[in-house]
Length: 135
Image (tube, rainbow, N blue to C red; front, side, top):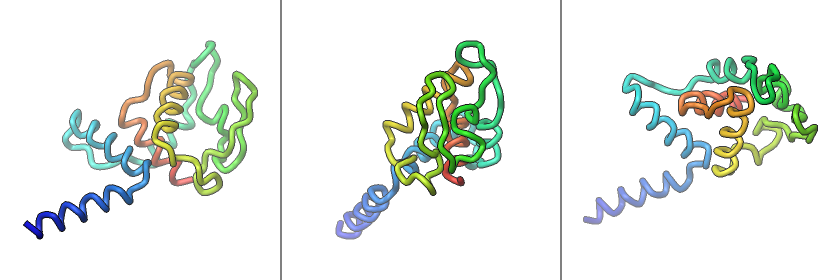
């Protein structure tokens, strides 16, 4: 009994010490594996391709994530549609990035709809997050 409680305690402390990003990536990974049991892990290069690819997005304009966030995620961006300043996306420069689950979900959903005119798949979201994290 004591051994089981000890193991449960270790598992809970490990989960509690994981960042919101790590927890979200694990959740997305489960979703992807449910659809594709051979899935191994998210990929920075696929995420980069998604981030830089251009599409006819919101308001019929050709856009990509780079259109607002710049090609260097350490730089300040500007929203193409509103002109509002966007703080750097790189967590290395802006430690608040990828630290709030609610904000990650909100902005991924909104930005995929602006660029792709649809919500991103769990695979796409995981890949993009891995790319952003690497910057």
